[in-house]
Image: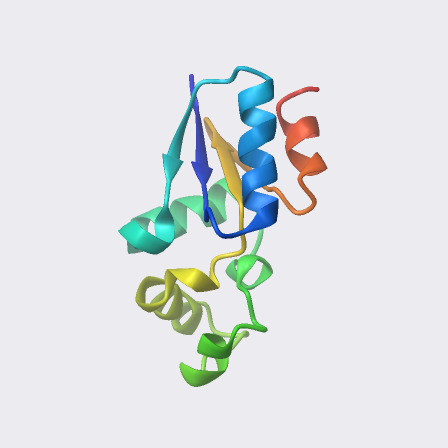
Length: 115
């Protein structure tokens, strides 16, 4: 079973996680979620696989978070905001099977892949 990397090439942490996956010769698919966007079901799956509340992987310091007037305590508001502005997704995220991890710091991914 291969991995999925939710990747933003402009993000140094995301590039570092991609490097970790490459160095460990893991089979993975890259999802450039800012270009492709995120679907409601995709975000809901990430919530399940990360075993975290949606608020735990939203970038609240981004200007767009404030511009969209999102409510950190309201999952529906956050879900709508992520679909409208995928840049608000904390990155990178690595998914494998029914589990996922946020690669901040990138060393989180090493533990996730068993290295």
